[in-house]
Image: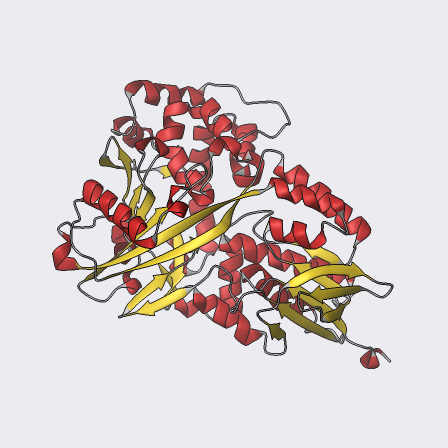
Length: 481
């Protein structure tokens, strides 16, 4: 009888947000089905949630990894709602909408109306002190330039230079967009990082005109979002991003969690797969979802499927962040925005600074200030050869010169995120498609997913985990649908 079938066993390797989401949606897919299923999540580290790590200290709520997520990207909002956590969502402080860009050693307000660095209001754009008149006129040429007809992928940098010119790219777009990946825009795939830019050029010819139209329709689409998400670009949780991790773990009550458990290799058998741990113990599995960085997937599967080693072409950049807490009365200046970005050409040690306590009112006690400074990007790894004290001194030096802050911090917290930022190369989508096809041919019950493939943001990782769960359920014929 159907009820007496031996349960299928799915092993998920990697306990970050992608792996946890895959487990959650895999469990959801069989809840209306009689198909029995066992799920095991294996994590090499000593905690689950990956880079999400919230620290509570002296009344501060401190994010050591990612600090928020895009409100318009629905997978994380939908998962939050499903977990019953919608009341925990919080948006940005409306008084922190201004963002600055460092140029010539001075902070200039980013012109209102920018969407992903693209102007949608020409008045403020033409008045900004960030660009020369020549740079502004070159950007305006986007309004008349023809669209590119080649079907080939190109780099994000070449695309933006072609449409808007070198000055807009270097002064505005690069610090804003490359900051998401800590990358060099000339090495990042346009189709893999910002496919909407390619789509807009193809549909509207002009990037500026297309973004203007998208801005209008975006306002209409926002009405479908929860109220807390309608008037904010980013969202977080009142008690920190670990809220979503705890919610997932609570929902996975019948899932087996195994931490401090590295996996050495996966072998195909007549009946399924053998997941061989680094301690040589073995898990028998009917299906495996691997939610690791590209280099981890290559190491794990490359000997069985040599084509998987192509993933080594996806390089990773190491970054770090330094948190500094202050007494507000000793700061010496008012914070009137969300922070500032630092273009490469400024030659600063920090790449950006978020005025966290101004942007997120839940992060600091009354009378206190929390700042978060970012370090490291593609081509700038000097911090890796410095001690923590040297790094903090360099950060404070930049803050003094840029913001005039010389006060002694109440405390500092530094987090190193080694090999954490995947750099999607030109041709990335074809690379991923080819690797997945060869893996499906040779090991059809093994799926690879995560930030290495189709987006590094938290909603992107949740979406990819959900997609992997759906595919696994279909492969194992678990779903009743």
